[in-house]
Length: 397
Image 1: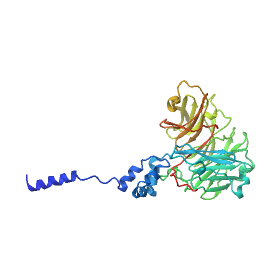
Image 2: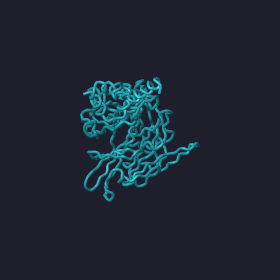
Image 3: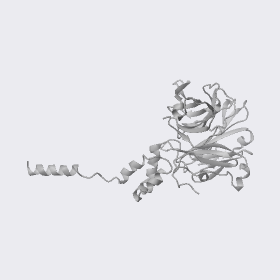
Image 4: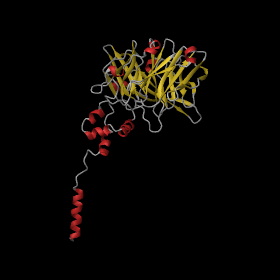
């Protein structure tokens, strides 16, 4: 063998035996950290490892990639009204459990105190909570639990004077485009949507407020009478449309398309013999509007398909045995089961199941049908899940 061949073989051995690049390179470390759980304690615990890990975990660009990778924010807890207070209850275990006082609030400040002696919780979505003073329906409060900011919005005069049934919601104005991931929206502008009815014999109304302009848009009405009052259950956002349950209606829901500003009554399947507390409007498999129906132990998922001719057909997409999902014994006798909450961002439902011995509560991921039992019970039929990419220690005191 020539000297040149020996030199070539030695060089190849050196290349093969060269040590791998260190694990703490920023790019490689970022690829590892982006895959850790999106729970509140995950990034702070990672940042505590070293200065390098802290630099990567707190970098704004990394955080955007972190949110985009996970897409679905975790449900941190629920909001409910308790007395005069807006109360937050965490559903996470330590070290991710968030203290009740961190996000709770008594609505109203001195100049708005009279408006919020009596109030109603309307919605929780995209990192904000919406309440309305019910004494005169004159003022809305948009509350950001992360920053503790409060934004008071006057209700349009048409909704104060004429409507006896007012519902509403709040949503991020950024939409789903341009790579935006809902769950880190507290710095984005927002919209407030109000809907209401005068009576069953008159058209329903809707109006949209923009925090960017600080004004309400034009009032939109249905072409025909709504025929039923809008339910107090939270609405569901699917694409650019909002959907509300209609009380006292056997086969209809309420739809407001934000893009085209159209308000309409939409036909739905008839769920004979099933109470409204066991049905929720959800984002169906494939992305359209659908329903989750709990008739314990059966759990059904429905979806709507629209043909090229515009004909809508409702289809039962999946039926699941909830005994297998939540782990209760198959022979157990249940009573008062209900779907008490839904988050379209996290794609989860909250379920309450009562037996002779106890009340049990579960959070169920709809795509995987994985569940987790919660260390609490649900005594009401409607709660507002708070889904958000929250990092422990980032809220104002």
